[in-house]
Image 1 (tube, rainbow, N blue to C red):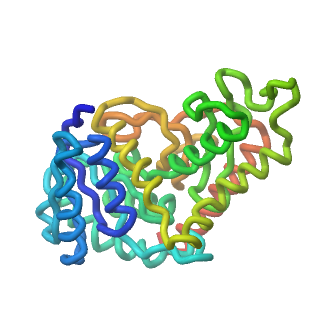
Image 2 (image 1 turned 90 degrees about the vertical axis):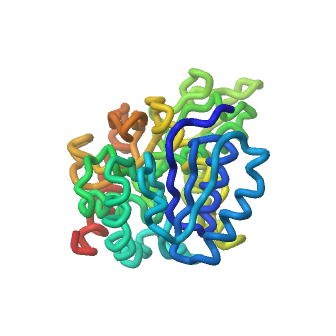
Image 3 (image 1 turned 90 degrees about the horizontal axis):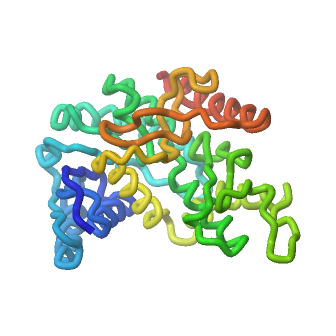
Length: 317
């Protein structure tokens, strides 16, 4: 795979940031990858470990350190820095601490890379996207979150496993908050072009019932908690999904991904960041799509927006 052109800066050398940098190198997502952190020993060790493997990762380079000047001229800045989600802790409970971190961090990054696209991975990413846009005053398309890109991957994997079909043939989205109020869009979900709720097994029996679909949705919503309980953090899958978003931007792909952007009237929602299928390409999010939803899905989207709006307001933004 030929490396994309462009410079990617990953802020935060913890489990998620290091995994994102590793995934970007493996996938050749950017020509130049920079890992930035204020913890000198940690970031230097991670960069050294990554650099030792670059014989096997193609043309991409990896550098990094504690000097913010290293981030200058970035095309994409991925922000993973922040307090880590603890077992049993919701993403929204992290909001206050991580908002304060962004207040100190973003102006310094923006000074170095005024033309970059900024991708928030730090949780709660939807709340922090609203705060980041207000801090930077950037257009909504240039500061957005990874949102439910990973949740959607989890859903497609589960659906493919359930019916024995490649996940690449499954088209379904998780939308709304990246968190406890997220939900699947069953209305427009398909497998190989067949509406999900019409899919039958080889014996002619219906593959999905309302109960089985709800069980799958619950498994997606709680997946991160299960991983965190077992190993302390989710890192590999979010690293890969972050690299995929970076590729869509640097490759000018106009790929449809369910990233989280501050909305401006879509579905009657304004001023909060939610994940919806969006066209991601040069310059960031180029368009947020309004896909068909039934009344129940519209109601769930509104509830998700209300929950996030309350969280943003509670922080004084």
